[in-house]
Length: 142
Ligand SMILES: [Zn+2]
Image (cartoon, rainbow, N blue to C red; front, side, top):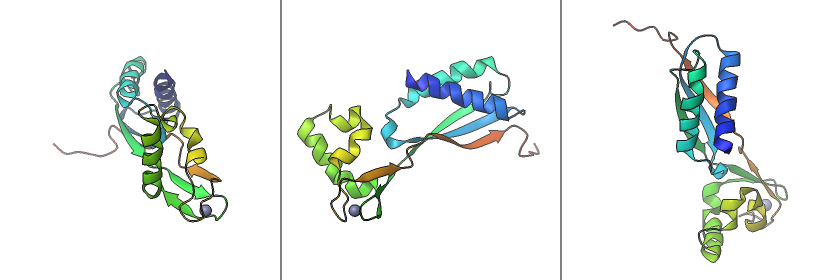
């Protein structure tokens, strides 16, 4: 039920920091979070009913592709650069491959495409609110 706690923190953050009605919120979640977007939206839609600030807010979710940094050669690379390696891990383990269950194990399976080191870290793995749109922020003439 990780989705519910995320939805709860989004609603909490919005109600604590805004005093105008919100029309839309854009949430960025990392590719490896494996959150169920549908459950997340459902949770948000359920929790938002409790507060007039967010009751009409729409939740948009963007998936962020992580960037990796090699601690050995200090180079950065994208998920697309190691996609083939991830594919090989997936092929050797099948559907329940370890990266799906435990994305934090990634450095154990993936090596730096430049120097081959396993000492890599993922950057951009955090969940954050990218954008909040309020009602009345844009004046419209009808
Ligand atoms: Zn390297």
